Length: 405
Image (tube, rainbow, N blue to C red; front, side, top):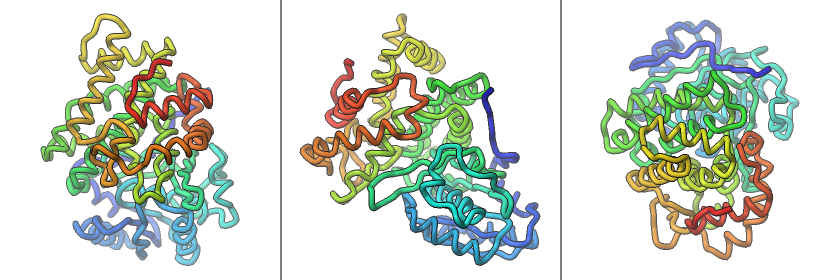
């Protein structure tokens, strides 16, 4: 038996934010990030709509990118005091992910962060509050997923929390919010979405309910991402739906080692002054992982189906896989995303010498590889890598060399 879970209600299209007027409850807390929602007036609108619905509203602002365990604990403490019956999370993946973790701690004050990270081990929520997620970026799709990523900065590791309990009750997918994204964010979130859809399609947990969502998302991203990046707002609006479909697919079909590697390299070199941004990491690693996974016959066949659906041509399966890899690399070029860690600048743009020194990468490689293998996303990857294979694969992602093993 398998399970397929999505939010009960999904409001989409321009002006969908107004759905907040219809919510029923006494108190709502709005969790937001660094200020773009405020700057563009969406925070005021959300607050106003909730007040029109008869609720007392409190704000929890300033959730950082890659939210920390400390932020989660701080937000949960505010919720304990305010006692909301609605948690509204607004913005990119970070504030929504943080609010999901806060929700668990609010409902179960004694739970530890370690307990939260037990895969599909969270006790039932909704005893105190319901959860609404409003996304402003077109990538993470955390508004429809059973996942949250929280960073432990002391360890330099990102931990996924995975449980259908944290799938939001309501998702609001309003493209007006996505139109405010800066160009670099369009690129990174768009490739995150592409990775979600491709990994979901080849995951060992794929099924008849997730496949159509993944394939249609891939087709839409192929058609609209580069145009959205170059400022076409109709395509930007379409990408907001595409990333949500990809999210519905991967929340139920799970992911693979592109994400495992991205989670474990993201903050691993923070002491050198930068992070490898999640979507950019996915974009760099995806072509390498396709080459690695395609050694598995079932995965190779499914990559071939993706290539066919995208209309890439090719006669043999090998050709189709190669054309898919080439297409994704070309997309990275058009989005100004580097091909490897060696050329990944501190500003995320391609450069001759990236911010991660070779000797530092090699020194930390065994630990990063071991952590990636233990990541929650590895279990559903079509080909299970050994420690040695994971190290070799990460080296290919550092140097941009061929995957031939």
